[in-house]
Length: 246
Image 1 (cartoon, rainbow, N blue to C red):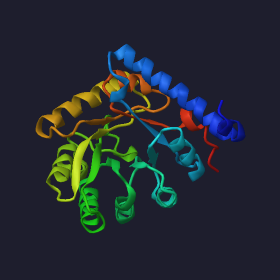
Image 2 (tube, rainbow, N blue to C red; image 1 turned 60 degrees about the vertical axis):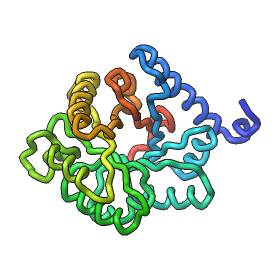
Image 3 (cartoon, helix red, strand yellow; image 1 turned 180 degrees about the horizontal axis):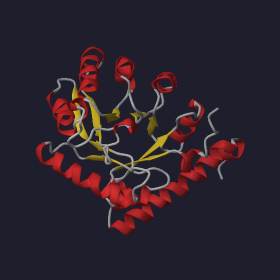
Image 4 (tube, one colour; image 1 turned 120 degrees about the vertical axis):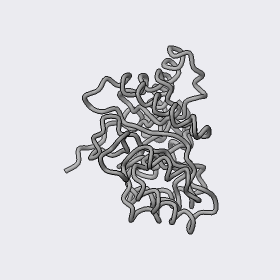
């Protein structure tokens, strides 16, 4: 334990949790015959203070995920003011009226799931960014659109996966980088992530730069890595169990 960790119990806790998570990622990569360098760890810091983000950056974690703009925007501003090197990932469902805010700080948006959202983001990014915004199309593996995501053959045209992918690819200020999904609750995670890998492969045939597969969280990161995930989104295993919302 360093002097800094001894003086800051929370930093010491995060350091230990980070070591454990990195160990799990490394072991999963060995099992899958992959290089751990192929997998990006995203620390999902929703409900946790900017101070924890600063601690994680000091510990070498620079990819930070948030799922609500009203929390993410002020954190991003605070960390930017402090000169911290952070790559911000927006991982939650996004309303169109938040597009102007999110495009200002997000480096990678994981949850694009409708052609109307694509249009709103494209307009906002054109005005508020100097370079294209990297985005992932969120895939609904079980076609339960209420939980977010676009689905193959969706009954709602704007949520049809092929239409959403095409809308991103044809936009001026967005760049299609890949796909994201959450394993449906009733599914075996490995089966879910294998299905996502199939979808990602099909999209990559027409869009070779779409190499990102964002899948896996604290409870199922091993299954995601086994199925080829390039990014895992880790919250509880890294930051601790969140207090119950009232």
